[in-house]
Length: 123
Image 1: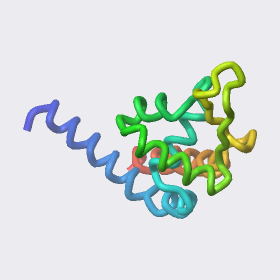
Image 2: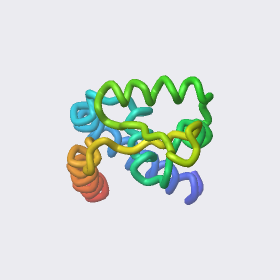
Image 3: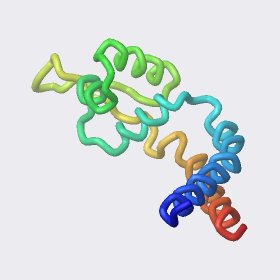
């Protein structure tokens, strides 16, 4: 086995251990959200004037599918839409709460992930 293959195998092993260590914690802390919802909320929080078209392009989804996803998020009370007063056709999407609903869970998961990474690298 070449040195490059050995390094790649070790990297895969570390990655697999990290995934294994964090899978249960991540699933538990984000159990109320699908991965699409989490990514969508994160994108909305980081974007300026996001709308269904921008979201659909960013996620390589149809506008209809993204519209469905945003309606679910509206029903959960996570986002809300606003019509642009200048252009009535265009509506923007904003997070309903100032703090992202998953931020506390995500911060905890990231902290656990980093500590798990240290454990993997020390073994």
